[in-house]
Length: 240
Ligand code: CA
Image (cartoon, rainbow, N blue to C red; front, side):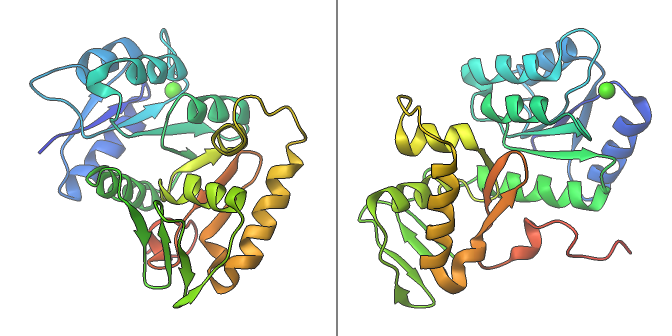
């Protein structure tokens, strides 16, 4: 089993994470610095299944490590979940735009974090699917067919492109800039409110399935799907 690589300079947090991941039956290794994290991530004999990356590190920063991991062929697709401080929104957005998959804000619930790790690992197993499908919603990427509760949903090309950009990576946060780039292209200089207008219209057309798109305040949007919402949502389970 490939390990979860924890890059975290605070020993108490790193040990707490390791303990809880191992209790869940996962393997974990700890790096106290970004430099050590890079070395372990590129270890051919023991490559990580996923990286839990603290952004506030001495020496090489978490965002710099994220950039390096995305540049290396061996780690280009390795999922990264960032651990960020409350209020460090610009760093979080930078990390997501560098290719991190998700983030959790400190202080976090270990249970939530483990659930995120499991969700990201599950997704990493399946490569480029031709469709997204859950109990209620289905999105076919090739022929642009969308249905909610068995009824076809008619979308414009832009609306479909937006839905596809989100649904291709369930659970992952997409920043506003990423979505504008994906759907409108790099040449788009218009008002970013265009994005919100399209999201609103898309949610309306999806009707009962509209809640599959979650707003991540100050960052962008996250596609959660309509089934098994428990895994991607926060605050929906008691801490017992
Ligand atoms: Ca730190």
